[in-house]
Amino acid sequence: MNTPTVPRAQADTGTADNWVARRSAATTGMYDRAVQAGLTGHTVTGRQGKTLTLDDGSRCVEFVSCSYLGLEDHPRMVHAVRTAVDAYGIHLSSSRNSMQPAEAVELEELLGQIYPGLHALVFNSVSSVHLGLLPLLGANVLPSYPVSPAGPLYVVERTAHASMQVLRGVLEQLGPVTRFTIQDPESLAAAMGAARASGRTPVILVDGIGSMGGLIDVARLQETAERHGGYVYIDDAHGTSIDGPRGAGYAHVALGGQVPANTLLVGSLSKAFGGSGGFVLTHAESDLHALRREGNTMVFGHSNMVTHMAANAESARMHLDGTVAALQADLWAATALFDELLAGANLVNSGTRSPIRGLALESEEAAFATAVRLREAGVLCFPVFYPIVAQGTGLLRFALSSTHTPAQIKELAALLGAV
Image: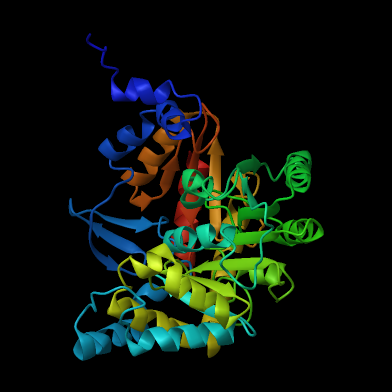
């Protein structure tokens, strides 16, 4: 007897709990249109400051890069990379726990100075931190973060980064996963109640600064987790380096300049830090030992490129010697100018301690048309459509940097004002 063949897409969409298929089905064709129109998916052939040369020969000022402090082409960083190439070549191809350059050890020691009292472990990306650490936390492997015998309840904020959202299937092997909305306190209270009723340890997963907008009240979430005997796990990728006298970042400042015992803070080396990779901060060296020994991405993943480790270590020194603090001042001057020039516009994050600004538009077509006009004028931004923003609407995201000149910001504001 022949069994009818069900097309894969149809089978996936028909599965009630297949959220990946649901998200794919809900995604509109606007991204493809944006690529075809040259609004995103750019191929870069050269760079001078914030001006890019694209493969079609055009030159554009970009507000796309998340290098909020402009460190990725700082002369000290470039020199560190060239020196590392002479010493090692470009790569030591092995897992981190097998072999690493001396700069990796130095980097982790320097991160311990940026975040006093904490121990740092560097991974090749923030996503690798999530995948390497969160299962071990749920399995009660990390000594400083014990979990109830009943196991964890992972509580994911709905706007938390996709690199955490996509791990639901992995995390559900350790304990149930539920979600809450930061604007709806009752949804978080319900999740805490479910953890208490089941005897599970709640683990709240949240961003520090949202990639599309919004500052998360991490201090309130930390207090909530503490009251319920749980943990808060903060992905502060967009907040790393942009605040604090040593560049410890948004979440660290929001937590009062310290990381409580029930908090795991994750940072990025790939955005404002100017290099590449991610790191986690723990309260004991024994936690790092467990991660080095058993973290999947640490044991089986590739190492950080030697050149990246050298650049990261130089950036850490720049965090500690005052260079980063001066660049922070330039960044906040740039955001203040942007906000002043566009006062009254429908801006996301206006007046906040975030380097990300968004222009919310009433329709996808309005966002698309505005991005086209900016591109024609030689300005690149990041156009965003459903399901990242509400259905039928659009958003233009602008990543501001300490290296944007006042003239570049004024030109952008004038173009947006004309639109």
